[in-house]
Image (cartoon, rainbow, N blue to C red; front, side, top):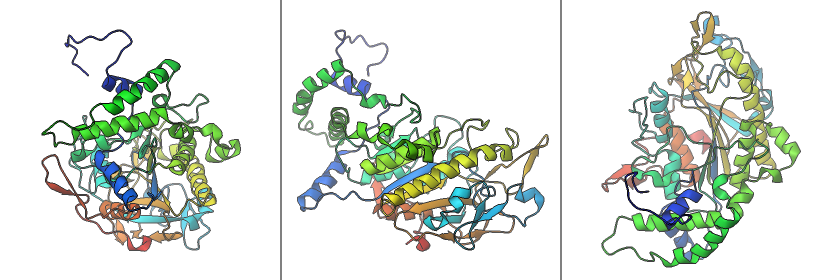
Amino acid sequence: MPPASSNRTHCPGALPRRSFLRASLTGLSTLGMADLLRLEAAAAATGRAPSRGPSIIVVWLWGGPSHMETFDLKPDAPEEYRGTFRPIKTNVPGIEISEKLPRLARIADKYALIRSVAHDSPGHVNSTHTVLTGYTGELVETPPFAPKYPFIFNAAQKLLPSRLPGIPQWVALPNMRYEGGGHLGPAAGPFQVAADPGSPDFHVASLSLNAAQRTRLDRRSPLLSSLGQSPPVGDDSGIVDALDTYQQQALDLLGGSAARKAFDLSREDPRLRDRFGRNVVGQRCLLARRLVESGVRLVTVDFPNVPGQKAFSWDDHASVWNIFEQMEIRLPVLDQAISALIEDLHSRGMNRDTLVVVMGEMGRTPRLSNFNGQPGREHWGAAMSVLMAGGGMPMGQVIGSTTHKGEEPKDRRFHPSDLLATWYRFLGIDPTLTLPDSAGRPISLLPHGTPIRELG
């Protein structure tokens, strides 16, 4: 787009092809690079149809959920540590979770809990970077946020071949906080959907064209196909290939119906929608299943505030709100949505090829803090719990443990790199792989890390 001072003008109602695509696809990041299509073509050349392959749904509890109120309660710890919630038994002997998660307690055989993930990044931005890249976060906590390394989702989108024309590789509902492609650049970003899927008028604006736009698209598609067939002599940057790929995938999205059908929640049984919960969290989780079923590889679901809640995140400082009051509202929503998602995937036979992850960027301080009589917990990366379900992995187990007061891992200490190595392995990506940065230097996907053997 030209700068504000540009003298360039256009006939009213006419847009150059690049501006037309940009205007029609507000919120759509590029969905892949030319090498993704080359990988797909290579598979086709062998006579093998591209596999649907594995998918990951990450329900992101931004702010840092307290392990002490969710999946790693300490009923025998001193009062200033244990809080007010009590553990309850699950359907797997020896596994207990919060009394505020009764539905999840009934299906503990369908997920695994990792209770000993730890890192030493203190803030939300650098903790997110550490947890989702494996590299210790060195980012400042003020905008603009520019990750040095790509999140696992950006890297996977870069490396994996696309599944189906007209279907994005990665959908973010509504975004991935502090996300960035790092040295991969913005081309590996997600397709973002900010609208509330629980709203009666939910639709994805960037997938909708009015009659006039449809006519223009039909008229311009052959023209776009005939332009820029080969990059300019001397252009070995890949930018032209990337733009052509982006344009073609944008046309696939706009011209086809696959994506619109995938996002159409009205096709779901109202009773199933009720089971997930008629709120933004529940409907995003249901939409995540629809998207994976339609061919999306990566879905990230942001858990926002819920009705009746003061909290807009899981950042339960004593100075902002009462952690127990907000957990009373928040946990039943999490319990309903996640249990419904896990059970729905099982009922459809999707649990082997779909991995569900529930986590945030940190835990909370085991010792309760107090602000004018209001209890809370502060930032704490030294111990955090992660729920993982499906993926064809052994479920119904707890991996690792924390000390008596929940302060740090007692056994099987894992760095986030180990968690990410497990995800990469599930996706069929070698976690020791390197990708070149803008200067051509090889950068490892992970600085270190080994897949968690209990999930092998």
